Image 1 (cartoon, helix red, strand yellow):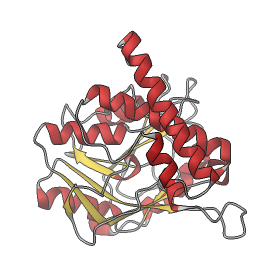
Image 2: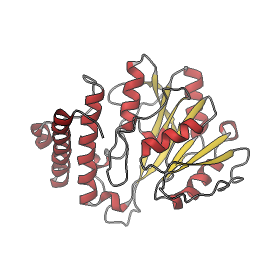
Image 3: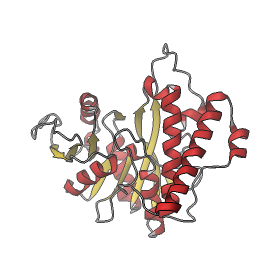
Image 4: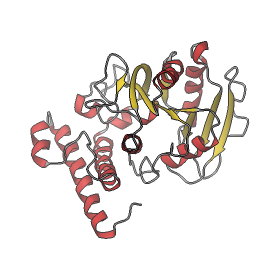
Length: 288
């Protein structure tokens, strides 16, 4: 398993506790923690004995970027399959078993589990979140049983498993990079696999709770996330022309879908990011 740490070292204890609670039949053999800070913060022997039977290794990747960090962890992983999650995500006790079984039994190249939002406490002023905003963090539609990936389902990077092969890497022009909240590294990964003729499946019983913090739900944060999502989709379209992406970047659609003022602004921010990046790519023709 691989997890990349940048600014959230304090979340690792909770993740390790969740991994200790995995069913014995799905216990981890190896955990690679990627320290993605410019100056290393985790020692080589960090929590080395904290998960019985699991070898924990720390890899330092000083060049900041989620995709780059995950790739460093994937290259360091020795197992036949790689499972990926984030330090502030919490896999349920059957996660390792269900995701590994989905890959082994189906023979698929990639499987994604069900990811649900772990929202702020009910007494928080941001506890009530509209579906349109929530969908920026987690998919809302899931099948009841394992199925091949198809609309309206999509997978998310904090709950993925795939075969450990040379092509099993994320595109490093996508994914969060410092203050640039790029995304869609998981979408591009899946599109690339499907275009190569690989099978990708949804495994809804492999559940991870993804943390959504109060700070993530502030208006400025929501709009910035939407803007960078638009930028990211423009990059995916440059990489995979003609690929079907479940989204719309027309102002008319944004106006029709606006349930409230925040959703309208979010949709417009996403459209702005998409169009600005598309124009930039036409001019300089280079992803950065």
